[in-house]
Image (cartoon, rainbow, N blue to C red; front, side):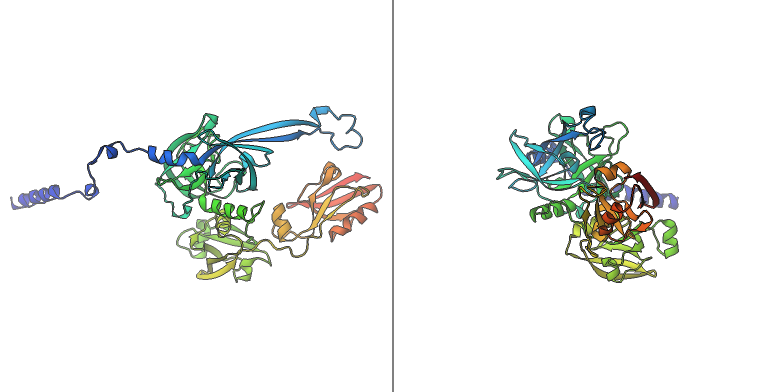
Length: 464
């Protein structure tokens, strides 16, 4: 009996205690709170999101173009010499009162005519200040623009999963549209489609074709990302969209204002791989994290700071890095000239050092050469491999020698491509760009070029 009374008292006390989850709940106190909506936020942000109409003229190329024998005979074959117009539709975001606009490279890259239309119908011509295909970002300048509405940038490193966001753009060309969702994930890398590679914010706010370059904003109307792509099987939004973080957009704007026409990334001079479960166990890590350094260039700033092959980079400027694209993103956000704080593991011991963010060195000199009209392969352009040339052509870190930067019309016909490393001509080694023209011109009627393409060796034979 006493036991039943104690149980009853305990249940009664529990029932009377306030529930922690409901302690802060309040009844709406006004009509404004009852009819809470995104309308004021949308009204504030949409004037700064624009529609972009880009046009470029491309030359329809005949398969016989440039051929000395068939070029004139089949001049009009396949539309050779005719111009073809390509149009693209996308969105953009105004970031300053003087008309600086950010959009995607795939929307405006290589465009010859760009028209920007505001949501009030005003139209402006625009030109590209800086574009980068790899990051899929472009910075535009509106002509004769002033007192423009614009969005402020929020540091994307402060964004958290679960935050409410709005995506604003022009999907399918139907007109400016707003969709809502949350931040679904951060530090997404290697998941975007198209040319964009790197580090993204993931959202379930519906993003469709035409939204590219549009704004992803927080509940205070600040830009946290630029919509770039979706993962889809049907062609429509399936709740997995990606946005380029505002931290990288900020660096693009800064470089554009400094006069850069292409985005300058810091050079790591290394190759690395994510630390998986097997690696983490062998390295003595409690959890898989960081980037394992697999190779270092002798001129790498990381090597100069004392970091070695086999070390694991854990953080760049206090931010964790778990994949090579994420590490490159952190370096790009830091910017050239910055000294980044690096936290890493050496022999399973945490270490810290500082690494200068430098451009890829032009050492040794590239000694670029282009063969003339009287040479055997006119138009063939070559350079000595150095870190800068290697970065431009995406060559292996260990690449050395003489590389083809442009095969020219005749070189392309025999099978040469940009990035091919020329090793020999008729059995004689090519050691410098200046060696190529004399060796070709003395080669006789039968010519054999020995080259390296990626990890493969190839021999190209032709008659002069």
